[in-house]
Length: 357
Image (tube, rainbow, N blue to C red):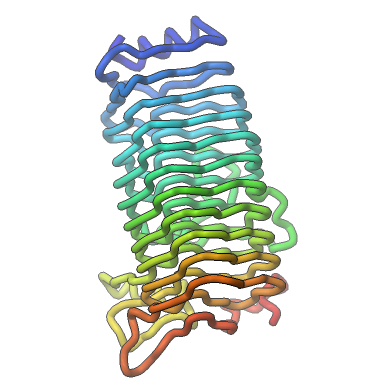
């Protein structure tokens, strides 16, 4: 068939099956709702739509494998999974979404996002939120995605979880910059035990990789290049990360377009800006309210701010055997950044969280 209705009928009427697609394109009039124990081999089939919220979605399902499909068109989220087990997406192209390529939300264990292309989406690439564990994100090409909020980075792993799990922006402000946050010690639903390796994360308008309260994750051998904000930021209670053999290069050159952007830069990047310039310049690696991390054998070069910057509270972390060279690309006569900065900005608000040193 060539429509979403026909594919949905096959999924509904054939549980526990492998579905081979043998058509060049399928028009999505409606979202495809996935079922347990379903494999879809797309064989390169193009899915396109005009104004739907999700391309594929599934809630409380397990053992689903989507392979070699191409999602395009006027779609907000390419794939959206809630409270699932054993989900795999591989060898696919999910480009040009109005929001994000892939979202994994809620209590989810066991997932793989492997060898996909996620480019030119308006609000970032991959979004992992809640108690999501035992997953791997590897060999993906994540580039040219839009949005300036930290939660619109190429890869986001966050503890921000909405009451409505189908609205990731429920607790954010209008510009999607400032969500409602639990007290740090009340964060009980955080991504954990994830591996992010061998990805190309480039040319995104926000950060390359953003961790907001995740713990026990491995960031290995990624190339994080020329993202407008930091290459990676470990933020708000991120604990126990291992960063090894990554390349963080030419990140941190954000050009402000308006007075609102200027205001937002001052709020978001307090203590990190050079306000004599028309640009805000951020480090390749930012450690911000984080602890117990290891940064080993990484290459941190040619970033526009400094190399590695500790902001607010950073405790009990090891930074060793890295190459940190030729950063400070945004320097001028009034201000110079550093290779490694052991410092702390004043807390944005008086807090009982990690903003204490």
